Length: 204
Image 1 (cartoon, rainbow, N blue to C red):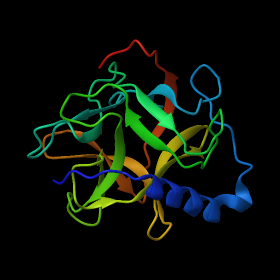
Image 2 (cartoon, helix red, strand yellow):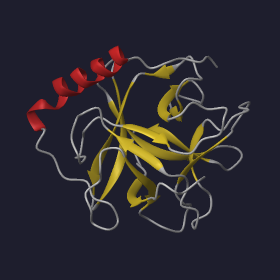
Image 3 (cartoon, rainbow, N blue to C red):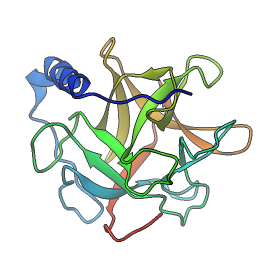
Image 4 (cartoon, rainbow, N blue to C red):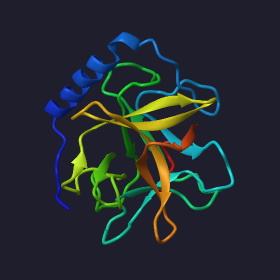
């Protein structure tokens, strides 16, 4: 693992890459939370499964040889909402819409991780061609890109778009040998989610 930093130059590059892909279709659907309110740019939310009975919200744990909780997972317990997540876009807008470029990061993190602890995809950690959602700044083989929220059925799913080839992949859940529900890039079976407003006083 290697510590890295995200530069303003890269953020600008992501913004221009997004515009080149999505400019013809910027009139996209509004995103709402479980109370029916618009999702705020920079707001704090729990990301929860729509289909209950098989795990809870999204959090982070240590897997493999990690000495710090760098792996983004779905919590095992259905009653566990996970950790609050900051959902933000480099676009200067008050509310988020479907398909806008996003940073996802945990608001409360241990001392061994940077703040805010942004998510990324890391390739080469799973068998096959899969990539795992991790906290940025620790792995050399991170995939540069951005997250998006997309409508699916009557709910939402997370996607990740690689800046190298503009390929967007759904985010799903895959169990490892220890039963952890890892968030991974997938070509089918996306993790269908909803967003519950969290309070700034919550601590994970």
